[in-house]
Structures are given as C-alpha cells and as structure tokens.
Length: 62
Image 1 (tube, rainbow, N blue to C red):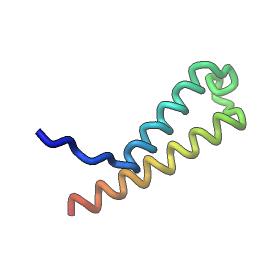
Image 2 (cartoon, rainbow, N blue to C red):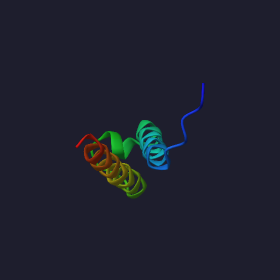
Image 3 (cartoon, helix red, strand yellow):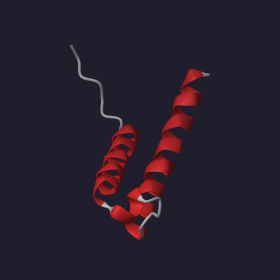
Image 4 (tube, one colour):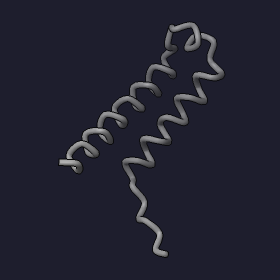
C-alpha cells in the first residue's frame, strides 16, 4: 500500500498545537487565563495555522 504524501500545512498545524499545549501545561500564567508573551505567540501561531488548514479543507469540499 502506497504511503500518503506528507501534508506540510497539516504537519505545521499539528506541531503548533503540540507546542502550544506543552507550553500551557507548564506555564502558571497561561493556566490562569493570562497568556505570557511566549504562550500568546504560540497560541497565535496555532490559531493562524488552524484557520488556514480549515479554510483549505472547506475549499476542497466544494
């Protein structure tokens, strides 16, 4: 069975999710609802990639 080619956008999206989740688990400020500068940056990157991935998925379904 042939392996599916890698999806760079999906890989970056999942990497950003993982980085954001790992940071959140260890950051007291982020757990209290106050994003620290690093947490805010990580979450912002995740949100941008998630939006891009969902937009692409939506276009493919049309």
